[in-house]
Image (cartoon, chains in turn red, yellow):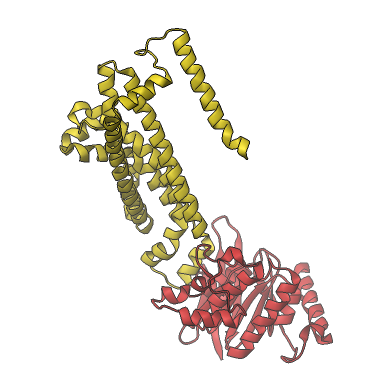
Length: 241
Length: 250
């Protein structure tokens, strides 16, 4: 069942850059999509259009049925430096007129940060800050989670841990995820569907369905290597065209 | 560290000694340049009078500073929420800032009537702008991503102001407050000067005027020294408040 349909969407900016051209994409319920491409291919623009933070100049973006609750994680943790981890996480609840303390504690627990409720962002490591940001996105129990290169600034070890966490969360609650990344490995490891994009103008050049099993250590599977190779070829083909 | 602390004090002592020696050595009359000893004597000749005057000036300064904070934050907040208010208010705030207080103080003193209120109004006009403009800059300081986040959760302008813009503006506000503190004292003194004997006739500026008329130059200097010390104390107190609040803030 579809959750969202992007139909022939286009977005150009004032300086004449065509950020997106003729992009069509359907997001299914329970889907895990990776938007993959080099910088400037419009993947973040597409994510902002889906989040409703920006509007397309052409085409349409339509929810199938009621618009779902959204959670967004940006490339930076985007925390309020003057607020504790708990207050940062419960922000969406407060903006909805609720207290949210209990829900924030639970959300912090889900990302492995129980006990850090009172910590200020500057007292946390980069990975922990990103976990706080993730907990904040999860607190409203969103049905669609939008992640914009959330782990790009983290080291490899921290990144692997957070990637595992995101997959575990997704498998546990059955929500849908659109994940923007410029890492072939990240896309191959995480997603069920890899949408390859290319720049100038930003457009979709390929869609690859992942055949990796949900169970087991994906990073060590031969099929993972094969998927990485398949994506690499798709990106090369996009570059050549 | 010890040397760093001692240096300014030693320098001041040396300077004062040299001053006193020069005044005595060249036989400079005290109605031209009084020596430090004469100034201290002048203070102790009428300590209650001068301290009461200092208190009077400080009350005007404090009232003007509080008024500047309330007005500055309220106006900056209004401008941040409403585009219309920005267009309406901002030019007038700038006009107020560039108008020399000496030029409009006589009018204000005539219009307001009550001398104390008139002094506070004048000092507020001088002190208001740094708090206002800094707070306004701070209200626009949150990162675009945080603003996006608030938009995503459909936060209204009021909640955005309380939860995001005001806390983000705090460091800016505190920096402005420190500047405004000094300016409030300057404004209070200027207003007292302009008001002269038509004012409340009790502030330090009035003492300076009065001592000048009577050629009590050492007392004039004593009043000046008190003003400088008061200014330094205000600056130090607001600086301490700033670093304390910023430690808690981040």
